[in-house]
Image (cartoon, rainbow, N blue to C red; front, side, top):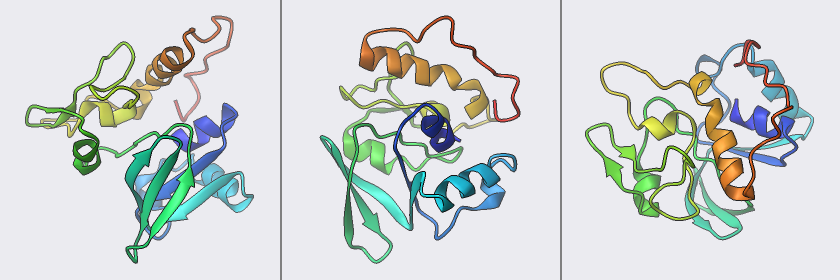
Length: 169
């Protein structure tokens, strides 16, 4: 979903994915046709069987399934880890993890973690949700606005229409 939203907002998107192909059982059914079309048409670069190992300034080092590194240019990196969080990247980045759910320490107003310049959004901001899921991507739309405002120093225009009634909202 984040890849689609970022693409719609005008970003050039590269999607690193641990599996060999997108898993339809883990992606909302109404989003699957769009993300597949964006990948097929070259609008979103898809890098299957890769995972981030290091974020260095304006580039990310991904590790391929064969162990070889792949360097990708990136102005911004969104770590979207889903409902069952693998906190290893947060740990490698030095992000403090709180409580049994390993919630990344962050400022809820800016979404910036305790490591300056590293932000967390979506369900990743809630850590591993023990005792029931309370944070969904659908309840996390405000994270993008907070991060953009922090990075640009200004809030999104108030006159922009927000369409949260859409099925992907």
